[in-house]
Length: 365
Image (cartoon, rainbow, N blue to C red; front, side):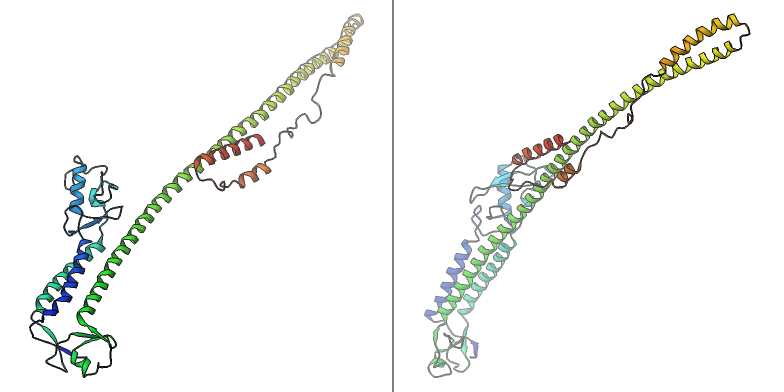
């Protein structure tokens, strides 16, 4: 179907589509009203953690009234910490960082919808005015305006085409009703898309918070794990020092005893050497009475020295320290198999198991 722009005064029934479009746009406009200034959002628009939207200027006004001592962004100093205020729609508490309201995320989707709405509203006003001067005319029937819509061919046409032309066997509907219906569907689609995107934005915010929580929990559990292993290392070191002390103690006692025997044998040996020297000198004595007198004394001393030669000596294997041996295979397997306790969700349930494990390790050592 071909049609052209012609000039004809509008008929009385041509205002129906404009009225329906105006109602749809009015419903959309209600969704774009700031709850603070009660006017359409002015850019930039910020989205709160509760998923409600505010003009950043309005959010800043609320924040400044709730935090009068907080330094503004343009001041010479920058506040070390942020403040907080409550959402005017749901009273949810909004906690800000050191950037204040400038740290809130902009809702670019709402800003884009506002731009589209304003363009559509301007276009609607222009079209409403132009429709008062211009009417689309049928090219086949130049005196007929386009006032119906062929549902079969999905194209606008005129009444004469329906009665006598190529659309006489087609299903048709008033152009204004089709226009109003499609405008309504498009507006409803926009509203659904806005709601869906707000939901997605909320899910993204929750996932970002989840990432932060995962990082914090992982760091905390890592620190606890390192602390537990540090305790095990301390227990092993303490036990090692105790066992080394036992070895050192017996080693010192044995060395003390052997060295005492060495001193006794050295004293005996020195006395025997001296006695031998005295005996050699006595043998060289030329006078028999003197020799006999000294020999008798030397023989008695030799007998005493011979009896004293059977002094104590260490038993066989006295030097061995082989009884100081430990079996660490089982403990090593236990350490290798240290794992996280299944089904434990909090720190209080973990600590008794770790302490019990340390006690068991200490007892095995």
